[in-house]
Length: 331
Image 1 (cartoon, rainbow, N blue to C red):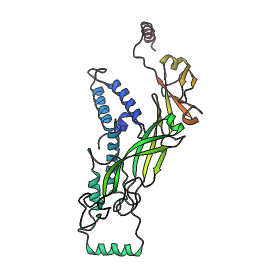
Image 2: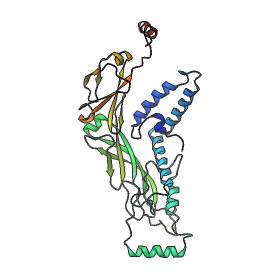
Image 3: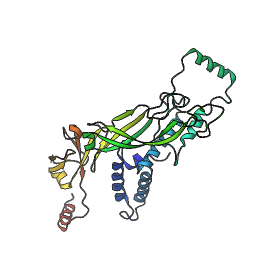
């Protein structure tokens, strides 16, 4: 399966597309061969970062990658709960079809087209008897999982997002009647469903939280002989430059000069709400230390600040002289 691109870039799977792009640019600058001439390890790391970004760096590529991983996991489980077409908890997929990876129509052929055939007669009879003794389960099309990115401001006030939606719908020609039929419909090849695209408007309620899931009933894949699945949309809030989500917590990086980490001092930050807050930096603070600010996060929630080392692109002659003196003193 190769390296997990999320792990390579050091971002969570619920990161926004914008966060992935910002992280990639930061890592690419850090490990670029021009900045690390002759360093084979840095060059290898740069190639891995680039390959990871190629997989999930755009919304379309990320959707395709996530879909492929879901399909591979489904096949690894032997098809999961895929009963007939979808069962009640079977295959979930968003952004299927086209491109590399699996073709959703192949999956339908495998899971829907092989009903009967070489099955022994006694097994068919046993299955028929079992069906007669209990009411048939309601067939349901697979759910679709997708994500949408919005800003913190949009989450606070609520918003409407135009969403490009592709799903399997009942064939317009045979109206699903060719599913499992000996006379397949030429338009849907006997699947009873066909891929159709549309644009829908998703209403995000005010006060939305990162990772909150919206369920749109019967907007998933349709079943030719049953009910449609649901569309499950995960809301991802873009925390902007210098911030990220981690396990549902909003983390804000606070760059601190090395001298201030050692000697202590104060630094002013801008919170997600736009407020300027002064933070006292204790003497001997270490890189990675955190502090929680109650009420300064998204929608009045907590904000965790994380101290990171401020790395200037250039230093003045005075700073270089001071650093030389520190070097001579052994610090």
